[in-house]
Length: 376
Image 1 (cartoon, rainbow, N blue to C red):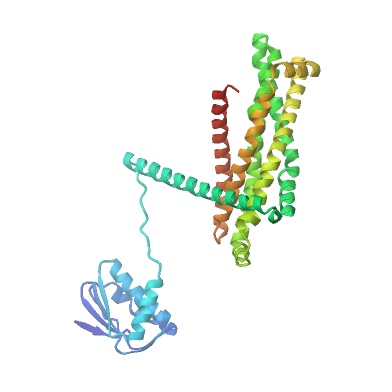
Image 2 (image 1 turned 180 degrees about the vertical axis):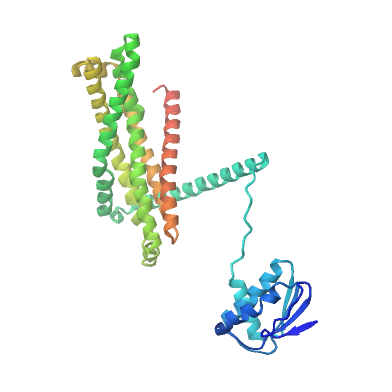
């Protein structure tokens, strides 16, 4: 067996047993020197690091010893550390436990079984997320029940502020969107109905589509992208700055202070935005019908009264509070999930928008089936 000090570097074969006796101080000032001297030992397969003659060791020195031992073991060698004192042994264990474990990069697999595995995992995660959202919704409902019992706890200032931000500030974009949708539907309907000489039925097409489906659905999508993302970003920023934790320390309930005013504001405001979208959609459709089909505003109004039942408007109005709850709950839930880094804030804000729009469309489809079964 060959013995050598770190200052001596004989030529060795990688399979020769080596006993390295480390002397004096193994501290940060000597790390570079010791690293160069231990390079020969790192290539061996059987190494013993003897710390009997070591007089002092700091964290940097312990890290060097642990790193050399890890490199030897990575290429299949064996490295033992002997002769260390109790304090040195404790320091080595602390350093060894603090070094992050390298995870092997998983190779992407493309087989059919692997595809089913990925689909199953994604389905399980989606189901788990749905359960968590339902639990968050139940918590909000419970806090709302407490608010009903104690109305003085309602934060009116916050509620009015969010109603202004969600509702009043969104009227221009909602109006423009609905007006253009009405124009497009009238133009496309005119092109198709003119082939059959049924231009007058464009009024039915516009009215039923806008009042029953598109008006409230597109309004909810705009609000999800605008206000839902704002909810996630605002609450997530507070989470990052630990303001939510400070709020809990002061005895304030974040659900009652942050979530309820936003959700209630959405429930109050979204039906009003839906009404604005319906009016502007009909106005855009009437204007394009007048220009493209020579359907005068009076004829449009008469046909609207004769062929469109009030239930078409009521169906859209009934959906609005449900869409509002979905957008508010998802936006606030994703905000509460934000961690301490900006990456999670951006990722969960995007997730909030996508998930809100998806759930709104699913809810709209379920409402369509429900009302169709009722014959409404």
